[in-house]
Image 1 (cartoon, rainbow, N blue to C red):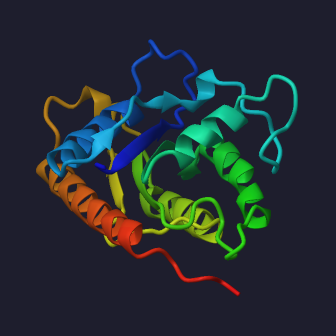
Image 2: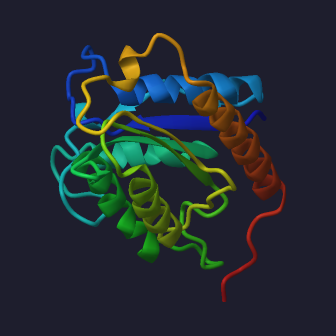
Length: 204
C-alpha cells in the first residue's frame, strides 16, 4: 500500500474560497511528496470546521474533532501547515495540538499512543520572524503526543519584516524552499516506510 499524507491548513481564514499562503506552501510540499510516491489527500481547512476547545477526543454535540481525528489517524504522514502570527504559530494550530493531548491517555495494550509510528512535518509561512520558534512549538508538542519527527521536517518562508508580500503572491517558489520541500518529503517518506515495517517496541 502506498504511503498516505494528510495536509492540515491551520490558517485563520475560515472561508475555503479565500486564498491562503499556507495552502500555497502545502502545495509545494504536495508536489514533493507525490514525486516520492506518496498519496496526498485533499487539504483540510481546520478553521472551516467546528473544532471545540478542550483536551479530549470528543467534546460533545457539534464537535468536528472526532471525524478529523479519525481522518488524521488514517494517514501515515501529517503535513501540519500554519501561519505565524505575533511571532508564533497561530491559534488554530494550537487548538489542534490541544485536542491531540488526549492521545496521552489513549494508549493500546503495548503502551502506544494512536500517533505512534506516524510522521509529522511542518509547512510554515509568515511576514515576520518566528519560523524557527513556530516549528519548535509544533514539533515539541507533536513529539509529546507520539508523532515522529524526521530530519529536516520544516518547510518555511518568512518575508521581509513589516513587509506586504505574502508567500502566495510570489511569482515563483524560491529555490531554497523547493529544495527544502524535496528534503522534507524524502526524509518523511523514508521514515514512514521504516516505521510501517518496524513498529516501535512495547513501552512497558
